Structures are given as C-alpha cells and as structure tokens.
Image (tube, rainbow, N blue to C red):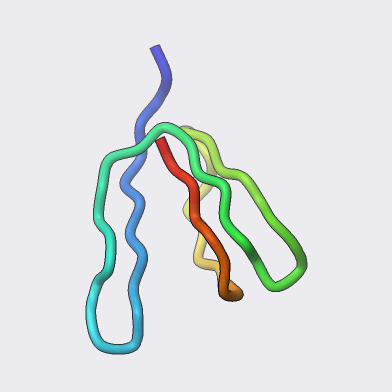
Length: 54
C-alpha cells in the first residue's frame, strides 16, 4: 500500500489545500518536481502552474 502524507498548499492570505495524498508533481522554480510518501519534509517555492496530486 502506498504511503500517504499531508499536502499543505498555502497562499498569501490563506491555506488553499490540505489533503492526505500519496504523490505530488508541482512546478518549482527550477522545473517540475515530484514527491512520494516517505519523503523528507519539504518546503518549496512554486512558480505558476498546475499541481497534480493523488
């Protein structure tokens, strides 16, 4: 079974998303990156784009 983690996306005024997910692909400043359950905690700046998660 896939390991879940909590995805929290925060904007300037409010939290936009807080969900339990197993994977994430997001547009970072240096290109798209992926995260799976079990990854070390991560804080990353994002550029405009689509965040995909499951």
